[in-house]
Length: 293
Image 1 (cartoon, one colour):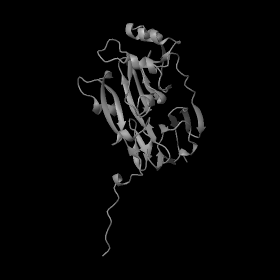
Image 2 (cartoon, rainbow, N blue to C red):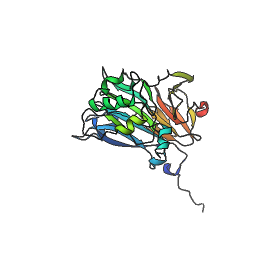
Image 3 (tube, one colour):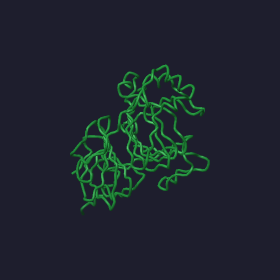
Image 4 (spheres, helix red, strand yellow):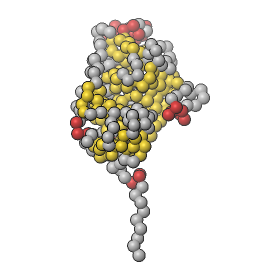
């Protein structure tokens, strides 16, 4: 009698794309009411500012994706770049990029300083609060993309929902926190900060049918895919994450939905649905044309 083999379970297929696990993080600047896809994370009296999307062994990942929801201003802060991180014995720097999902009228993000300043004057401005007037506050709207390389002084304003892609380093040096009783890190912050304007974020450009390049040149590349035909995605040569902006069809047979983040470790099959819209982040400094075929 022939022995029947048990069907292969999804968890036994390490080559298949996997959805990362979301984890809510409370922040003093967060919100009590979250978008409906994250409604299960809302708890009475708690302000959720971030949802982190993590693998089981998060320390092995080079990239981290978060959804952020701001009711108030975040601290004015800075992170080290890769060179500064190496000097400090850290595993990597912390380049970031933001894709704005929603922004209330008048919402702003501070990115860099309006003009150059000496280190001592930057420290003094952080102590007396006048640093708020030094920041280059930029109005933002849904769909905006901003690059924040390590070393860039920045602050996200209130009334914004966004997706943050960053190098996987949980380290922030606060310069100023609007009187909130949290620790500041003035020595480290002034030491790593670019004490002047931030680099200009490039304009998005088409790099193929349904494929738009948003950012490159740092520690990761960010694209936006709005596809209509089935495709194969090859994540075997990089760390590749898919971030649906809307219901996006199926990936290796599993449904894709907004508020999720998926890791593609090998070659995966994407069947886009109507209106499919995805952010795609992957490690490396340059566009990889052969990721999609």
